[in-house]
Structures are given as C-alpha cells and as structure tokens.
Length: 154
Image 1 (cartoon, rainbow, N blue to C red):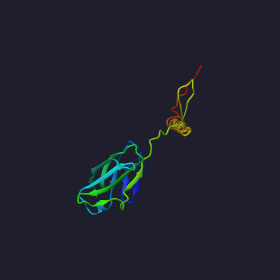
Image 2 (spheres, rainbow, N blue to C red):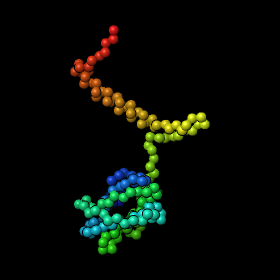
Image 3 (tube, helix red, strand yellow):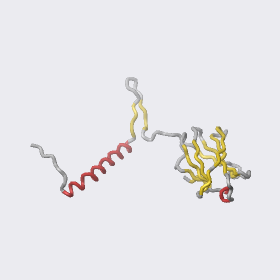
Image 4 (spheres, rainbow, N blue to C red):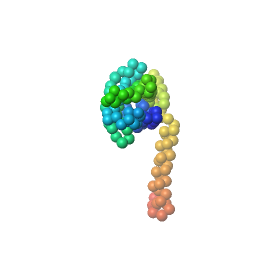
C-alpha cells in the first residue's frame, strides 16, 4: 500500500494490533543518508512515542512496527545528521482501522437462548461454490475416461 509518494506498507490497510513493515524512499534515502530513524507515536497525543533505526536496503529504509488500538499512526523520519522528513511540518498521519470479524454480521440475544452469530450469506455461497468446483475437478475426468465406478444396487 502506498501512503504517499515515498512511503509504502506491506499491507492494504493499517489494522489495530498488527505488525506492519514500512518502507521509506524519501529525501533522506535520496540524499544517501547512512542511518535513518522512524520517529512515531499513536493517537492525537503521540502516545507510546518511539524511535527505531530503519534497515538500509536497495529498496529503501525499512522497519517493522506493531500498531496499537489508537485511532491513528503518526510518524516522521530523521537521519543521523539531524535532518528531518516530517511532511513539511505536518508529519505523516494515517488512520488505524479496527479489527472486525468479517464473517460475523449480527448477534441476536434472546432470554432463553445463548448469543447466536450468523455468517454472511456471501461466505456460505463461496463455500458452496468451492465445493462444487472441487467435485467437478475431481469427478469429471473420471467420468470422461470411463474410470468412474457406479454403485449397483440389487
């Protein structure tokens, strides 16, 4: 996922409590800095403020970061000479999405019954389609070649 012109993540979405790899090919990389650090925090107040030295590769500087359950991921970059890339003083700020169970859509409660969870219809249909494709792939060659044995009942 490309967040800006020079910053990439190894995932499509930033999801709470997950580990993401960030790659940076911005000004500090282009200026051949030897060491680059990511300076980051979470939420409006930059909670859990931290600096991590990024690994220099041919593809840019890279680091793995564990996201928290705050609403945003805030960061900027600095090198060992005191040069900063902080998005022209605005820092890089991106939302962190909540981890939602994709298969569960509703929960119904009843006085006499425990909580019941319903699966999405699209998930159920995808399972049925996969099963049908499996059966076609497995049995169609046998039927065509004549190696399909039918059970004969008396």
